[in-house]
Image (cartoon, rainbow, N blue to C red; front, top):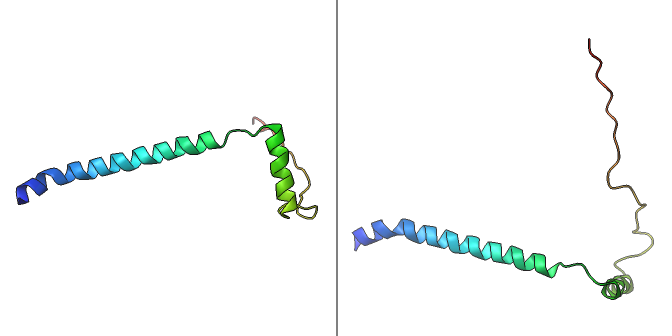
Length: 79
């Protein structure tokens, strides 16, 4: 009995890790599929629902900023 356990415990660990990885990958694929872009009528309904629940109001709105600001680096001069 002891020899059987010593021989097969690495296999049990590998199978368990492979099953966990498979479930993790399947969960990622399922979550990506459920996050598809909403149609215009669904989007406006979700926005109206969020406003009616008080999740969005005028005080919480931040001023719009550009996503990426262009930063110019000083040019290095050759010596």
